[in-house]
Amino acid sequence: MPKIVWPQQPTRIREACARHGIPLPDCVEGFLARSAPPQMTSRLAQAFLRCFYAARDLDRTERDLGGGGPQTDTFAAMATGKRVEQLRERLSALAAELARGA
Image (cartoon, rainbow, N blue to C red):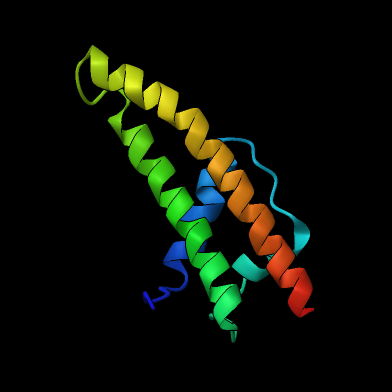
């Protein structure tokens, strides 16, 4: 399993959500605000990492905007909407997993 790096990964998730006006569910906000990584089941760790990967991919897509030619910009603009939606879905899955464990 990939390594969880705390607090860099939660920070990246929060920043991506803030840039795109995506509200964090209360349970996810509390989870991400911890100063140290909590004990996680395999399913919770997987949901967290998928959320992080969605935020990372969104960051990469945003970096591509204005970084290349017109074709790159067009592709990145189309991909940004998809990446935002993917992050929303991953946040919902993380919230569901947190609720399951509560």
